Amino acid sequence: MVPIDIVAALELDTCAFFVVLDDIYSKEECDRLIRKSEYHGFNTYQTNKYGGIVNSPHVRNDLNLAIIDGFETFELWSRIKDHVPKYWTDNPVSGLHKNLRFNQYRPGQYFNAHVDSSYVDEQSSGASRITVLLYLNDVAEGGQTRFFSVESMKHIDIIPKPGRVVLFEHGLYHASLAVKQGVKYVLHTDVMYTKPQPLPTPRTLAYSPFTPFTANSSGPTGFD
Image (cartoon, rainbow, N blue to C red; front, side, top):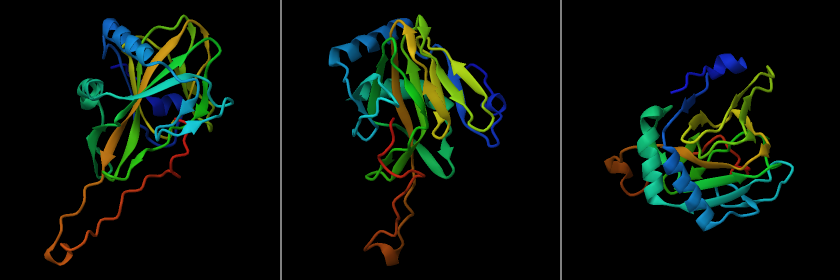
């Protein structure tokens, strides 16, 4: 674990979950994931975590790919699950978002300042709370992930390296700086939390009193 006090570094006025982990994957494993992403092929258009197409080149112009891969999702979760909160408020952690999103950045490509939206799963009444970034390679120049505060104007840069994982809560401002030389590959997903349903009583067995969990999000409008 790379010790970074994000609250102190950015002079935030509230606490924030932020963890950097190194060597979660070996270089050989990262190379395998890169080959897998190249085999599937990258899209020239951007999609958000709901699968919707986002055409906003002023915000981002990277290439991306979304796949559902139970094996890779299980592998990633097994390596990071001990480093995420078991509960978010009263909601227990349930695992990773089913979609794995690969991003490729070539020279001149970027993802400008934004905050990640929360994905709400209506079927499980769960919502994502934490972003997972897994860097798959070194970048010759550029391509850092910059976290910053709009109040203090402080920032920190996380440099890509194979096997490095960044875990951070939705709501932190960040950007993927433009690659200047080389190509950047990153795998991107989310940690999900589920709101448990109350146990039924004899008077409520005929229907469910449960109100679907709603996140602090306006819905599937995010760029991520």
